[in-house]
Image (cartoon, rainbow, N blue to C red):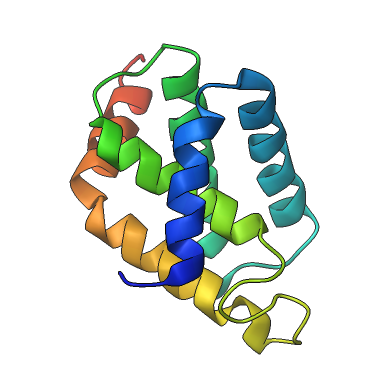
Length: 126
């Protein structure tokens, strides 16, 4: 995916994992945003919650069955989701989230095997 703003988010994701406080702020920011908005289109809220749990489990060392490149993509999509100014700024009513949702769905589908493995791990006694 060639998106200048997503490339910025990927670069930030590499550094966020070096600072647990920044990672915690990221996870809390996304959790807050999805709790205060109605993101039901194509299961966006559910997908974001899975990604949040996955990144959190990886960050605290509970879950390591995912390649580094995949965890960076997941973290980058969370960063992009919080970026108010991206390809389509979030303050534009309705259309402001189209790029966020499209990117989220692309990453989610691209990493479906990794996500399915995590959900299985989570449901079977993590």
